[in-house]
Length: 63
Image 1 (tube, helix red, strand yellow):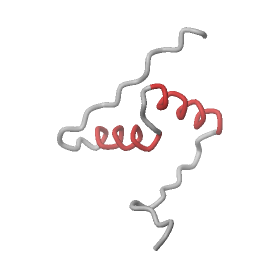
Image 2 (spheres, one colour; image 1 turned 120 degrees about the horizontal axis):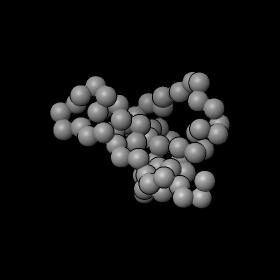
Image 3 (cartoon, helix red, strand yellow; image 1 turned 180 degrees about the vertical axis):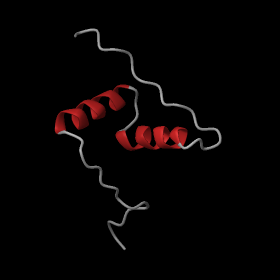
């Protein structure tokens, strides 16, 4: 069937727009995306074998 995702869409509540946009910017700065980084964090958090804690991008020097 067309337009069907491989994985179900998961909703997240309680995340304000500014945080969501800042997270997108940060993940893009390390050539990643929000889904990949959230998945990596969750795998590390539940101690999946071989999972590593995701690394944060360098601090922004403009602020």
